[in-house]
Length: 499
View 1 (cartoon, one colour):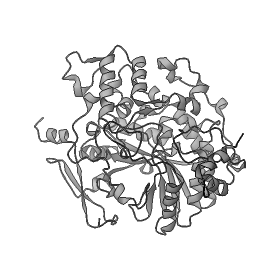
View 2: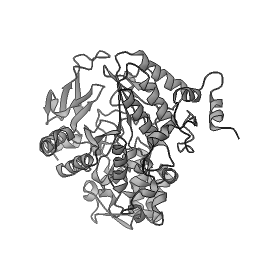
View 3: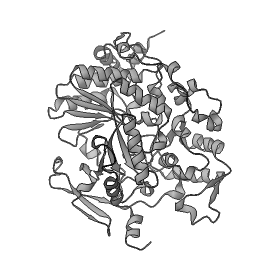
View 4: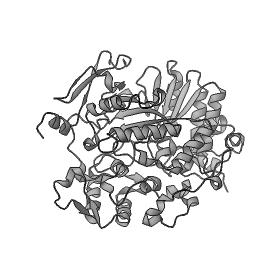
């Protein structure tokens, strides 16, 4: 039988393959288990036999994980799934619900006969309910309208209250419901942050002087409706033909070559898509490539995995955690900084599984920071946001950013006015230690970068227009540029007393 190494090396005839690059640069990566990523991922992964990574993998196996509430058993289709299966990453991949047909089938199995309506549509339904069939049709209409395709892990589906899904904060983030959607603000854009214009090479966004964003893949374990990269991430939808960033040898090497050629670059974010969908060997390869560059002092892997598929960090039959800790130790030995950036939006996303995963990362010395998106009806009140921040802090996950929801298409119903984020910061500051207090920011439309929401130059509640400047962002003739963020149209109407 041909080895995985030789099979995949054949993908790149006529020159050294990326797999061969793995072999020459990722020394010390132990033999990995069968790959769990989709077959569409074009960069194949070598499986070296060296055992250096095992020195960094001395952590409890699944057999030592305490079993607590087996919450997934509340889902009829998973009522007989034992804990060892649910904590298997391979099982999670196999049972991920993706696409309109599979989601509709799943909903038909888990929804009650009647579903309570929510505030947005109650006025249009005297009974205040939807039948199961009506909600499934509503979701299918939402999928046809949304810019993001649907893909949800068993873990995140298990965190939803299926007796009242329309009012559940997890359901509202990931499952589009047409009757909740509002018309797009005229200023909304598919690529609201203008990332294409700030990309000197494919999949590499260089906006700040000393930091760049590397996008090695455009696949995620779960797709968010509000994704700022909906122009590329996920499968095509009825409304958007994506410009995917496939993990190919040529594209990766062009991006990493650019990073290496820029002495002013010191900090790299490895995102996508999601770094969870890099093979363990690919993760180690990128880490070692960055560590070998004298100009790079810091880098972070961005992944929502801890929030939507945390069992992977506990599954020793999968090597992603070991690869991450391998890179973290190599970075520490080199006097450089590596972190994992994750993405929790609501306290209900936490369970004992995510707590165990966070603890294992902490015990392994991996710094974890969180970035939250502020969304209407999900986390836009003080009690919820305060609980989320404290839950993160209690699990040694540093609350890093609270983002104003980006001005992307088809999520107008999730955006809040700027006043909401200003009020939340004012009310929460002082309630928790300052080093656990996140920054409340706006990622400026048009590529101005992140600015503190409270640093606005002006904010007119009547028009809903806030203005910002970004003195440190000067590329592409941005010096002295004024950036504008626009409140949702319906919030402006309400503020003007015309609702």
